Each structure stands twice: as structure tokens, then as C-alpha cells.
Length: 389
Ligand SMILES: Nc1ncnc2c1ncn2[C@@H]1O[C@H](COP(=O)(O)OP(=O)(O)OP(=O)(O)O)[C@@H](O)[C@H]1O
Ligand SMILES: [Mg+2]
Image 1 (cartoon, helix red, strand yellow):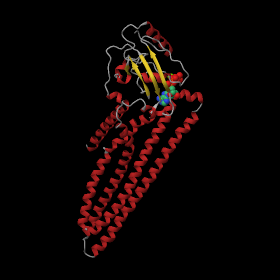
Image 2 (image 1 turned 180 degrees about the horizontal axis):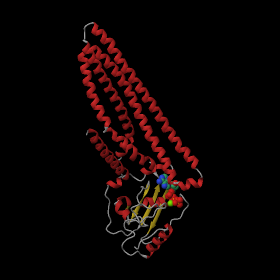
Image 3 (image 1 turned 120 degrees about the horizontal axis):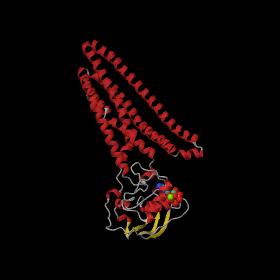
Image 4 (image 1 turned 30 degrees about the vertical axis):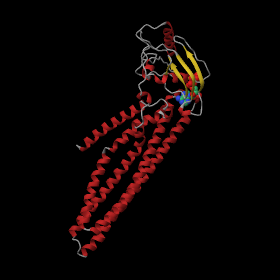
């Protein structure tokens, strides 16, 4: 029954944790995704959340149960014979010290394991999603080497963990047997001196075994709890990230949008590459209905202009105005719903079957000549199936 309850709690906990983490990620600024890689984030959502759920599962439950059992056994031992009880307590303290060191090592190892797994995922994800590029440049071997190097690191840390576990078990066995030897020696002498009876010594041996096993269970579960905590650090950090300002503030919704766009002395660099200035004092004005083509060398900042217009990033200097209103003052969701956007790299999202990534376009209203021309050019370029609009 308890196991079933634990399992159910675990499933719910993992679900809730994934939901919270995913919603925190979805509400981050776009610049956040320039520094965090997809492989890393999916790894946090996947294996890390699963690992964290163990905290409320068996580990915590076992630890509490065994602490209570161990404390009970210790009190009884001290009542039976305090010198013998103190000897067992000293041995248990030594075991607890080893267990603490082992637990701390497990925590560190778990953090590294999560990081290495995330890095291996990242390499695999990047390679598999850019398979054409990899094939063209013939870098399969290099990619494999890179993936293998992360796997080697993972294997290395697992081997160290096994060695540490072996050491922990050895310490336990040595200390466990030493309690039995002490009990027989000191207990035997106490019987001879008439301080305790043979029956009391038998009870003592049984209870000290109980105490030492409780310490072992606490240690074993504590180390796996530490592992969960090590793995969870990044997950909790990410869950605590505050949402992008854009989702918190409510801006203006203009009664009527004419569509006069102005860039006034706009300068910009990407937060992830602060040393490289992409735009410097750019000013331009686009009037309603005007068709403008921005031409420039690759990397000169054309897409960046559009990113700024969509408020995916904020200009570092200067400002952008729509119908005379600063972009920052407008409701960002409202604004984006009014912009038809076709990305340069355009993988179709499963929820958007149409060619233009906008809520209002294609519309139910008939398209005007310009819109029609662009829509069909786009459809042709992307070789898409199109339904009657
Ligand atoms: N998310 C980003 N983070 C950091 N730097 C970026 C980012 N996106 C673009 N850049 C850099 O900003 C500069 C301008 O890029 P942008 O994509 O605006 O150029 P572009 O004119 O659209 O090029 P292309 O003609 O190849 O599409 C480039 O140096 C590019 O490497
Ligand atoms: Mg571009």
C-alpha cells in the first residue's frame, strides 16, 4: 500500500515538476535560448525531473523510518549497558562520518553526471538535426569522437561512483563486525564481572545489529537522496527563473493600427555576444502600404531588424516607433498578432498548417494584391500544399 502511494506521489510529482519547468522555460526571454542549448533543456525536462522525484519517494521515507528505529535501538542499548552502548554509538558515529563523505561525493557525482548527459545529448541533438551539413562537410567521425568523449567522461564518473560505493560497503562491513567483536569481548568480561546477564548480552547483540543496520539504511538512502539533490540543483534554479517582462506588463492596444514603422538611431548587440555590435545608429521609416526590401551582406543585420520589430530583443540604444508610439509601450502580444512573419529557416510547427506564421494572416478576408502575390510566392518557394483560402 505504502509502495503504491509512493509510486503515485512520484508520478504526480514528476508531472508537476515537468509542467512547472516547461512553463518557466516557455516564458523566458528569447535571449535566454541563445545561451541555453536545446539538448541541455530537454535533458533537464527528461531525466533530471525523474531523478528529483526520488526525493519524496523511497529515500526520504526510508531515512525517516530508520532514524526512528535506530534512535529507539540506541536508547535501549544504553539502558541495557551504557559502556557497551557507548562503544556501539562510537562505531555508528564513524559509520555516519563515512556515510556523510560518501553522500557528499554522490551529490557532486550526480551533478556531473547530469551535466555530462546534457552535453552528450546536446552533441547528438545538434548533429542529428544538422545531418545535411554534417554529411556535406564529412564530419561524421569528428562528431562521433565528440559524442564518445562525453560518454567516456560519463563512464569514468560511474566507475568512480562504483569504487566509492565499494569503499562505503567495506567500511560498513568492517565496522559491523567490529561491533560484534566488541560486544563479545566487553560483554563477555561484563558477564564474568557479574554486571550483565547472558540474556542481556544476547539482547544487546540483537539490538546493536538493529542499530547498525539502521545506520546503514540511512547512509544508503542518504547517498541516493544526495544524488537526487545534486541532480535537482539546476532544475530548481530553472524553475525559479522569473518570467520575461513581456509577459508581466500590459501595454497599449491601439484603436487603429495604420502601420507607420520608424527606427530612430537604433543600435543593438545580442546579449550573448555583447562585444559585437550588430546595428549602429540605424534610422529608417516605412510608411503604411509601402513595400521595402532590405538588402545587405549575409550577417549585416537584416533579420536582426525584424527581430527588433517583433520585440524578440530590445534595442540597446535608440527606439522603434509604430504610428508614433514607442514599441516598448505597446502590448506585445497584440502587436505580434498583427505582424505576418515568415522566418528565414522555416520549419513548420505542428499547430500551424498555413504558410504565414500569424494569427490574422491568412485571414478570412480576401487578400489584397500585394498580400496575394507574397503569399503565392511563398507557397511556391516552400513547395507547400495549400488549402483554399
Ligand atoms: N541569436 C543571436 N545571438 C548572437 N548573435 C547573433 C544572433 N543572431 C544573429 N547573430 C549575429 O548577428 C549578426 C547579424 O545577423 P543577422 O541574422 O541579422 O544577419 P542577416 O543580415 O539577416 O544575414 P543573412 O543574410 O545571412 O540572413 C551576425 O553576425 C550574426 O552572427
Ligand atoms: Mg537573415
